[in-house]
Length: 395
Figure 1 (tube, rainbow, N blue to C red):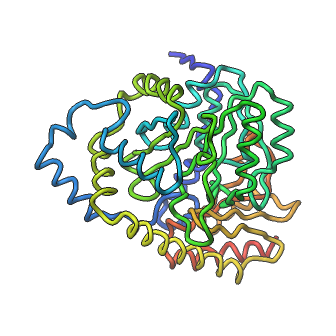
Figure 2 (cartoon, one colour; figure 1 turned 135 degrees about the vertical axis):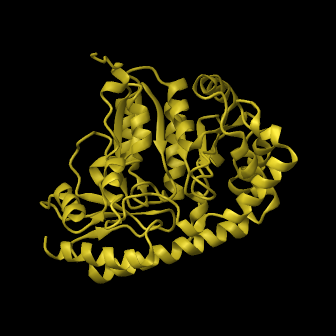
Figure 3 (cartoon, rainbow, N blue to C red; figure 1 turned 45 degrees about the horizontal axis):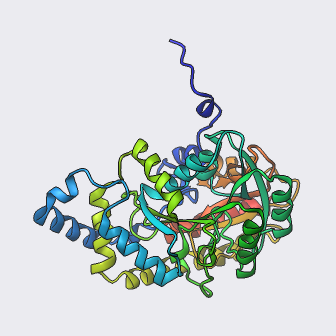
């Protein structure tokens, strides 16, 4: 049988991260390739207690069909949470629970974009979002990053050159893959440009609650007076990625279409998981939990950066994130980055992700690679960074 796949899917390739993770499943490999929370970050006892309570006292509520928009109590809780914490939520906004932030991004693309429409993205950016955008045959335009976020004059040029742009996609806090945080001034300018050109913004913020250094910066959505910003958040990095619970806040008119699109996708997100999230936020010390996560990730990030300072060749540069999960390393010009990453995992059993996995233009040259500090043990950080350091000394 010859299988003829749709044009939307046939051009998509497996995630390079997933392919490297297959190699890193070897127990002898030290993996800096994942983006998972630290194993000791999960509040397992609280989740077990909540699950037992729900399934004992009101099991049908967690086992029956529910609303596409999400568990009502969780929607109310999250509206209050993001309003109090981030100043998000105007009279024209609505909130929907989605199956992880990834679904919120994919559904937004589905309801806003036709084939051939333009999406402007930070370059590099999150591969999951890029593949969602590619699956709708959109035209992707990348805008380079600077130390304080997206390059504004290049963004302005891209908007002028592409008046058909549907939205700008950004990850302002501890961006995946670079770890860069967008400055307040740039956030304000991004919103002003969106106003000027009447394009929407997807503000993806899965890592915002994991700031362990510096001061919080207002979200772009908090500046939204015209209904231009769709804000996407997630419980994946602060509670559990396996429960697949995220949320999307945006203009009511757009969210109503996302509800219809979600009904076609999965009817509704996992209700038991939504109930667990709501009870954890309202009945447990959520702020204390976040502070514990910050302490875990600050320790791991500091350890990794200290070891990199000690072992990496001076010709290699890297970001120093104030939160999140990732560090972005850049090799000198002329060094074959892909070969470096391949040799690291095959010859030295240390897995990192080639930066080419995150470029807006597939296969675009880059000298960078991404490493993760949240998942490996301290012992693996010490050993793995020493190995990578020796490799950098040989380039």
